[in-house]
Image 1 (tube, rainbow, N blue to C red):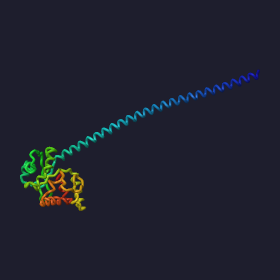
Image 2: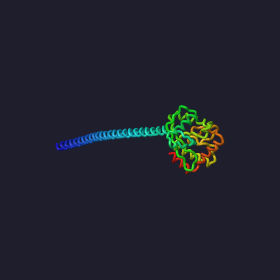
Image 3: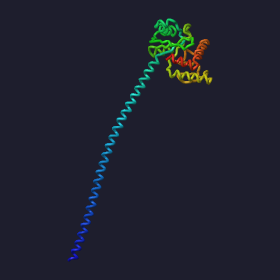
Length: 259
């Protein structure tokens, strides 16, 4: 009887131990699953929140960049438009004789320019907005250049297209009409011509629209003088006019007084 009781107690202890082990294992598994679920949910929530914040910031920066690009483009376009409008309506007249009445009568020079356009160029429908005589540099016996503002771009093109007829005019044969070239391009042209003369290539190449190009027969441009087909005296006067501008000091003086 004692033996049976002992075996019963041992069996009971074994079953209790097995059951406790099963309970501990189940609890551990359930806790692990629960912890994993909580951690995953927390991580997913934080990641989603961070992504939303980054997306918002990126969108804000993108809007700012697009606004800056648009503003910059508008500023550049506006500046270019103003520069073009200011430059493109001007022409330059060289060797137009100076008269004393220009100092006392403010309308006299404008009348002279109007006569040049009407009688010299044979153009009746070109309007002159304003004229300015620039001072020549000290020691020069040549008249200062005259800057003329034309009413419209179409009229300016017409003047430049007709300038070659001046060579057949007894009164204006030594007067030259040129396009008003921007300051940066004039400096570039002067440098290019100096290089060509230094290399001895000024008879083979010319400076045209800011570039050095090979000289061709009957080559004309709105930046050239009235015509390449001039008399010997006229070509000599033109060369003397260019030689007067060879020295850097005189170039600087001309540029300072022009501006």
